Structure formats: C-alpha cells, structure tokens
Amino acid sequence: MSRLPVPREDSFGSRLRSAAVAARVGLWLGVCFTICFATGLLSHYAQNVDHPIPFPTSPSWGYRLTQGLHVTTGTAAVPLLLVKLWAVYPKLFARPPRGLRRLAVEGLERASIAVLVATAIFQLASGLLNSAQWYPWAFSFRATHYALAWVAIGALVVHVAVKLPVIRAALGADVDDTALDRPSATRVGAVSRRGLLRTTWLAAGVAVLATAGSSVPLLRRVSVLGVRSGDGPGGVPVNKSARAAGVTASATSASYVLEVVVAGTTHRWSRDDLLALPQRTETLPIACVEGWSAEGTWTGVRLRDLLDLAGAPAGADVEVTSLQESGPFRVTRLQANFADDDRTLLALGLAGEPLSLDHGYPARVIAPNRPGVLQTKWVRRLEVLA
Ligand SMILES: Nc1nc2c(c(=O)[nH]1)N[C@H]1C(S)=C(S)[C@@H](COP(=O)(O)O)O[C@H]1N2
Ligand SMILES: [Mo]
Picture 1 (cartoon, rainbow, N blue to C red):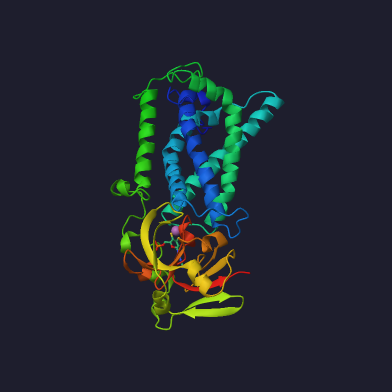
Picture 2 (picture 1 turned 60 degrees about the horizontal axis):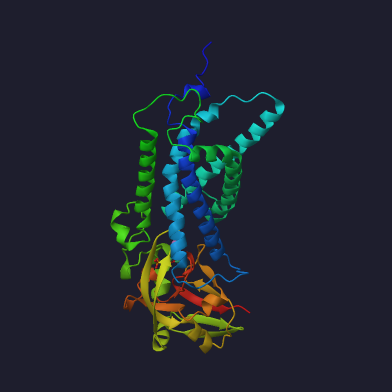
C-alpha cells in the first residue's frame, strides 16, 4: 500500500528556513500590520455616520496621508508575508509533543497561528482586490475587513507574546547564527540569508513604489499598481462616471434645482442661482479609500454661506443626497464640524472650468480631511438634521 508522502519537519534542509529569517521579516511585517491596523481604524471611524468624538477637519490632507499609508503598507506586506510563510513552513509538519499539557498548549498556539495566517491572507487579498475595485464576493467589504482586522491583530499579539523569547534571541544574534536552527536545516543554498533578506526588502520596496504613486504625484510614472493616476478632467481621476451612476439625464436636466431643507422648509437654488452667490476657491484633495488621491482646485459656494441663507443654525449635521438613484454612496452624512468648516464647498467648478459631469456636475460636496467616498457627487438635496 502506498502512502502519500507527507513531509516531516526534518524533511526541509535549507538553512534559509530559519528563525533568523522569520524574525527579521516578521519584524517588518509586524510594523506594516500595525500601521495598517491603526490607519484602518481611523478610516473606519471617519466613514461612520456618528462621531461621538468629532473627526477633525484639519489638516485637510490628513486622511490622504493615513489612507495612502494604509494601502502602501498593506501592499508591502504581501512579499513580506510570502517570505515569512515560506521560512516557517516546515513548522507545519512538526510532530505533536508528548504529554497532555504540552499538547494542549501547543494545540492552542497552533490554532492561533492558523487564525493569524488565514486572516492575514484574507486582509491582504481583500484589500488588494478593493484597490483594484474588483469585488468577487457578496459580503460588505468594509464591515468584513474591519471585523477581521481585530481578529488578525489579536492573533498577532498572541503570536508575538508566545514567540518573544525566540524573536529576541534571533534578533539579538547574527543572521547566520545557527543556535536556533532546526537540526535538519544545514543545507547552504544558492543565496545566503543576507541575500534572501535583501531580496525581500527589495520586493517590498518595489511594492511600495508601485503603489505610493497613487498618492505621491512624483511617483506616478513608476506606479504600475496604482489603479488611478492623475488622469481625468482637472487632473483629478474619476472614480465612478456619471454614466455608471445613471445620472446623465438628471444631472444635465434644465429643471435641476438644489433643495436645502431646514426645519421642514425647502429652499431651492438652480445652478445659475448658485453661481450668482459669492464664489470661493479651495485647494483640497480627493482621497479615495482605495488609496489613490489627488489635489484639486475647487470653486463654488461655501456650504456654510448656503446654510446661513437657508436659516440653518451652526452645529447641525447635514444629510447629503445625490441624484444617483441607488448605490451605497447615494446618501451621506456631513457632520456638523464639516458642514461648518469655512473650506467646505458645494463645488461648481474644478481647475477654473465648470465641474465636469463625471466629477459631479451640477454640484458636489468637497470638504477637508474627508474620505473620498463621502465627497458626494451630483448633489440634489441637503437636509439640515435637527
Ligand atoms: N453620488 C456619488 N458620489 C460619489 C461616489 C459615488 O459613487 N456616487 N463615489 C465617491 C468616491 S468612492 C470617490 S473616491 C469620489 C471620487 O470623486 P471623483 O470621481 O470626482 O474623483 O467621489 C465620491 N462621490
Ligand atoms: Mo473612493
């Protein structure tokens, strides 16, 4: 009877699959995951409807920076995770220890590693697919990515705590030190440990360059992974076109009026009425949650001016409704501190030109330090919430 050749831990002879390599790559992986987690929490909070602690409107480029970091460190983590998994792979085939107590402890540790590996792969894969705007799944990206982030970071903390003695020993010794090696790991391969690590840092660096250009204009030309570049009217990319949103007819209709509802009374402005009001110009970024961002010079009516004309008191949230008839970003909430910020515009123009249809004509919201998803295009209605 033939048996499947299941490898054993000592079937793996390469000296590269070592704690020395795993700890060094793991350190940077931990740095990337920590940045991803922190910036992800921030992004999730910014997109919540309620802000018990107001999300700040300054600096206006804050979200642009944190979300750029989120997507860049997430992309850099991909080669790091692959090398890390390769380095520790033999451990998967380690014999279970003898003795019930040791068996139970090691079983728990292995379970936590299984959770860590599964969630880490899921987070990186779903994040990358989201950046590519490809959603081959039915669940809500944001809710799932957020929930599993907690699981991943929890499993990571357990893993680091359990491995701390090994990590410290490995990082404290020379990378070629053999004290922590598995007995079978003696084969010297084509590259040294230093060579493997250098290649890994290079791969992570390339991943960073290939992504960061989505937010750093100077890097745009090298950013093959940057999904959105500076293309688009006014130098600002278009995320969802008017056609895709199904608003072409309603947005260009001669009967378009903006409705502003305050305490049950509806005030109406046509686009010409809005253009007749004092116009302001602000330079503010669109910073998409998918990581790309671009600065635009927006002209339009200061939202607070409009709210004043409609008799709305300061300090109230504003519900923004788009002409779009369906889709998750049709209705958004502009929290009071955003609605009252002097830089927040109902934009009518970009880069000295009338707003293009794809950028939100006839009017769109543009506010400082705000996730791109909430910069509602094709605005039809503003309702001041009591
Ligand atoms: N009505 C509406 N507004 C919207 C969207 C949308 O799908 N519908 N997409 C949002 C997203 S995800 C982003 S990043 C910005 C992009 O704006 P832009 O296409 O002008 O660059 O618009 C936001 N406003
Ligand atoms: Mo976006």
